[in-house]
Length: 156
Image (cartoon, rainbow, N blue to C red; front, side):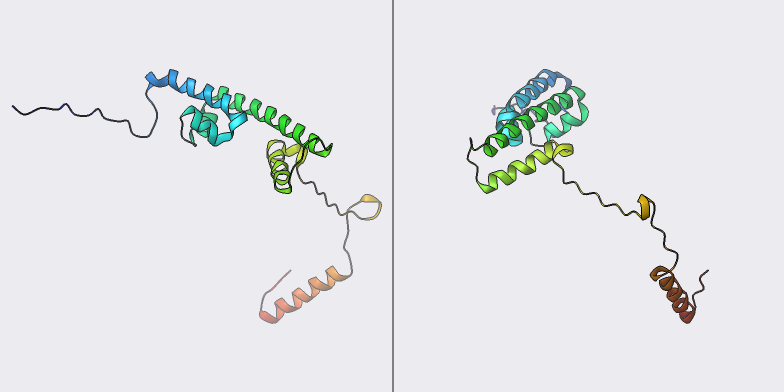
């Protein structure tokens, strides 16, 4: 009689894990959140054993994970600000590329504080609106009417 082998167990494909894996998922979330501040996104994924896209999915569907990640972002921004303060005070050496990366990271973590600001305002006399009654604007409108008449477009 020939050896009969039992078929290999089927592996799950991509998609939602079974409910029986809920404990494993929570453990992976905790491991990822613990590793993220020191190892970054990719490093935390490797430590937690999850795909790089998984924490983004958790952030969208799990309000507790989202809140924990926002709290970590605050702590990380505080850490980066301390590094910047040390560099400014001369207590830390930093090359130009590291300083540039630090600037961009702080802009991403604290956009209200580190954004580029530019306000342009146009005001007329005494802070009022600008009024154009005669001059270049009326000449331009007259020219447009004339050109429109030449090519057969009627304007009011």
